[in-house]
Image (tube, rainbow, N blue to C red; front, top):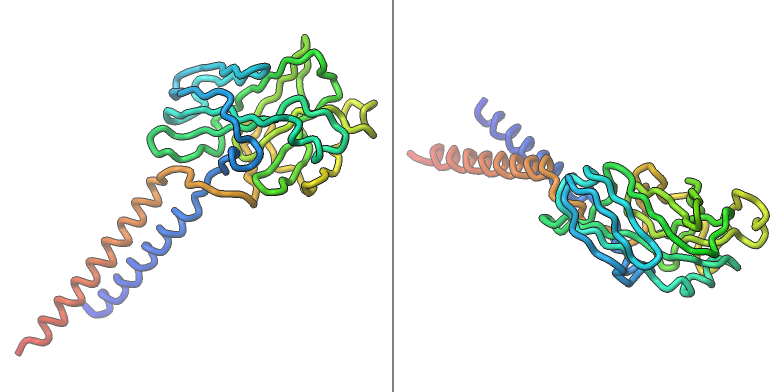
Length: 250
C-alpha cells in the first residue's frame, strides 16, 4: 500500500512539474518592434495604474486612461521613417509609421494587451477621409493587412483606438485603385505578404504567429504549480529512499 502511494505521488509530482513548465513556456508576450521596422523611441513615459496620461511625440499623441494597466509600466512610442515603407504599400502615401512597446517596470516583461484601448491621434493637413490604418506583423518581410476599425477624422486630425501592442501600424492614403471610395481595400504589399487581419482596433490584440516572443510576466499560478510539482517530486523521492534504507537494515 505504501509503495503504491509512493509511486502515485511520484507520478502526480512529475505531472504537476511538467504542467507548470508548459504553462510558463506558453505565457508569451508581444514582440519588441524596435527589431521589426520601428527602431526609434520617439517618446517614453512611466505610467502608474491609476494615472491618466497623454504622450505627445511630434505630430502624434497617445491618450491613456487611468486603469489601462494593472501595474506601473513604461510606455514607449516607437516610430520609423515613413519612406522606409514606401516599397511595401504600392503607391500609397505613408503619413506615419508607429508601434507601441509597453514594459512592466517590475518584471521587465512586455505587455501584450491593455485593459482599455488607448487613443492615437495624428495631425496633418494632408490627411483625407479615405486614409486607412495598415497593420504590420513582427516578421521580415512583414505581413501587412488593413485594420478594419475605421479612423475618426476631425479638424485635420485622424484618431484611432488600439487595444494592445501585438503589431505595428502605418497611417496611409487610400490605394490608387480605391482612392475614390470611403473604405478602400488594402493593397497586396510589395516585399510583404497578405493574410487575414491580425491587428487591433478597440479590441485586444491578436498576436502574430511570427517574430520574437517575450515572456509576458511572471504567472503566479504557473509558478505556484511549478513549485508544488517540485516539492511533490522531491518529497516522493525522499520517502522512497528512506523506505529503501529501512528495508535494507537487518
